[in-house]
Amino acid sequence: MSEFETQPTDLDKELNSLLVQLGPDTPPAGFTARAMESIRPQVAQEPFRLHWSDFVPAFVLSAIGAVVLFFWLGAAGAHSIFEEVSSPVVFNSISDLQLVVLSVAIGLLVVAYPLLKGNWNGSQVGFFR
Amino acid sequence: MKGIERKDMTAEKILIKRAKQGDTRAFEALVNHHARYVFTLTNRLLPDVQEAEDLAQETFIRAWQNLAKFRGDAQFRTWLYRIATNLCYNRLPNLKRDLSALDPDDSIVISDKALPAEQQMIRAEQRAQLSEMINSLPESYRLLIVLRHVNDLSYQEISQVTDLPLGTVKTGIFRARKMLKERLETRTD
Image 1 (spheres, chains in turn green, blue):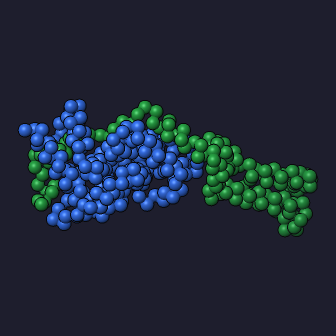
Image 2 (cartoon, chains in turn red, brown; image 1 turned 120 degrees about the vertical axis):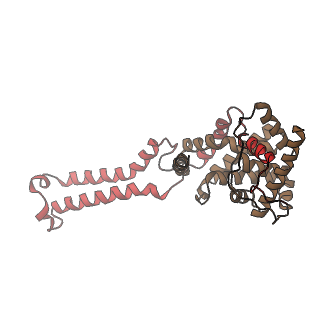
Image 3 (tube, chains in turn purple, green; image 1 turned 135 degrees about the horizontal axis):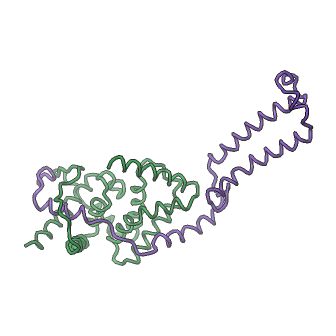
């Protein structure tokens, strides 16, 4: 056996030239569409597909919500340290009912965000995809 | 060219990430990009175009089902071709046996560099003749030639795709090229 590619012959070069320009075959028309048609039932059968990154926005919003609630609860008198930092003009006007409504709204946003995110991406079933 | 290739790979990584999260449109883009090469692989090995298409589609179905297992250690195309090759092994039981029977020849010195080629464009007739010559090769050599010269894989990648030792891959390609050169010489004469 002789060394290969260290001293290519004219025949080697001719073959290489042909092979380089051969190119891939063209699939039949509609190949991709048919492949995706076969795949889409797989998506419907597996609606629940969670990824750890789905929880990141929820954690971030929860943290923000917790901080906001912390100061507001403090403003409502739950902890004396907040009396020094809270603004009496703003916080004294907030009732307990408003605090509850705000807490529920933040909680709903934390839960709803992944669902909304899923729909924006066009996934069939938002958070559970 | 390297800059464009790097950009393409980044775009593909983004598509793969989205597809892993269930985005079928992202996966469809991947199918569009790789369909020709996967189909070529199956079409060159199987006698029937319909069967080749079925096997190629099965490749993408299995890729979708197992996408979570793709860790990105190898290129996505290498992983796809591995699936396609395994399906071909199931369909053609002699293929794996024949490939495994190739004795690696240590006297063959073969590099992975791009091969020197003449720059003249080939005519459609020459392309058809070359296709015919490749199709006349034994299945095992055909697979190696397609992976190397159409799908543009390195020897190492071919070794991963076919699950063969590197030496066996090099020997197989060397012998396949030798057969092609003999056929080319015969046609030229």
